[in-house]
Image (cartoon, rainbow, N blue to C red; front, side, top):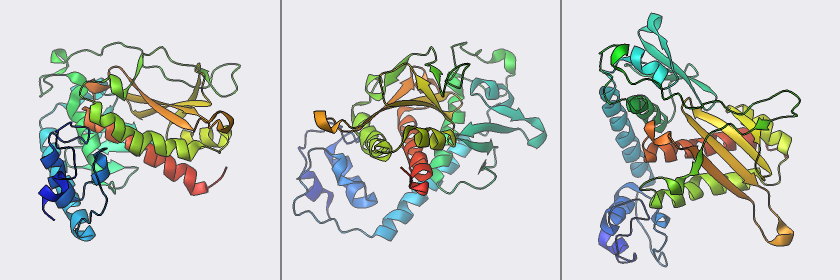
Length: 303
């Protein structure tokens, strides 16, 4: 199919809500790489048949991701890991060839200049490698951390990074940590990302949580590093250290059928999140959080 056939079904106004700069770029991606056409909220799909090879598209996407992994691996090659480690909440393992160690969604990451191990095994999804390399490359906002020594690195911001947890005389939570939280919509250049977050993160989580007991959700979330919090008028609030400096808070409101309110989830971020990940990577980290919870909760298929 010619991309122009897809363009003809869009508003052709280059609004950017699909995440692409132009309608033509979006259409080309739909035809060549299998991008979901429904990422355009205004597209007319009636009678549209996109002839693509699923296997070919999958292979092309994987090849593209693996190429990006190699590119990012090259970008971190000259970073001073010893200086970098405390800035991103990692441990520097000098006796293991200068490897960085840090948690990711309740899993143990070992990242070196040669590769990544996730819970002792190669990551199955190259997108995880892309996210982890991007996190390390950000350097916590340090402009230059190339083998200059600790004295030349920006010091830690000193902001409060305490998280929710079990406290004295609390059944399962303590008040929210004193941190400023914002939604994706409050971040720069996020117009198209808000809808994507809802589609692949918030809405699936609302469906996943609805009808399940609070205790079950807390127990399963703990397997991904989640800790329940109080202090909001929600059915449940859980904080996750998706990465050491990337806390995310899931707020869940159960369905109120009598009042016509469906179940709802809102994902919040620390105001400094973009110091550690670009917005695309931050969005992907939330999608992976949703997928991880889906696997943990649906795996037992308990209510």
